[in-house]
Image 1: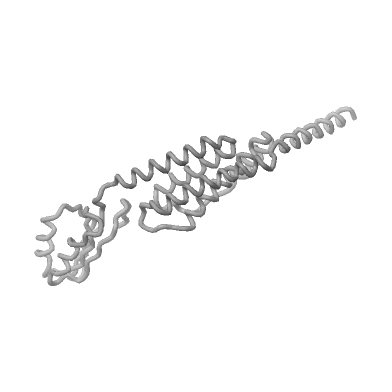
Image 2: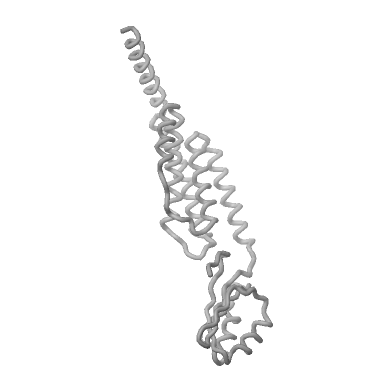
Length: 227
């Protein structure tokens, strides 16, 4: 009986302690933390929106960057309120599985950027969060404008056997890297990697004038190629 009473008192004490710790999360504190996280998320959103370097821009992913910044701030505030509650939340989050593939490796950096900003805002380090977010944004913009003018492209040429010599002659005057060559039914499909200035399609135009060439395609090459 005494042991049961002691357990009840211990549980009541833990409940009161949890209530006191949660009470420390006042409404102004919550609003300031999530507001700072939202501001950092908007900065990340604008940088991604106007300085995206990939092939296909995704507005849904960009909105996710704001959401993940605010959500991370919310989680950190909850975890910091009570150690027992934090263990339960970590256990709940550990069973979540995400199946969406990240197409551009640079997107992973933006995700970590949003998580780091939300984490520091949730911890109450608003100055660190804002300064860090702005400095990373400035660094990314500088790197964006310092990138090389020449970019990698895949040049895909489909031609008949009669155009083999002329195509080889044009390729000999270019710097290229062979990716694949498929010969089937008297027609050849050649894929090579070349480096050209942006908006310069003169290399592809030369192949179009060759008699026997059935198709010429120029694609921006992101570094991943599947045969």
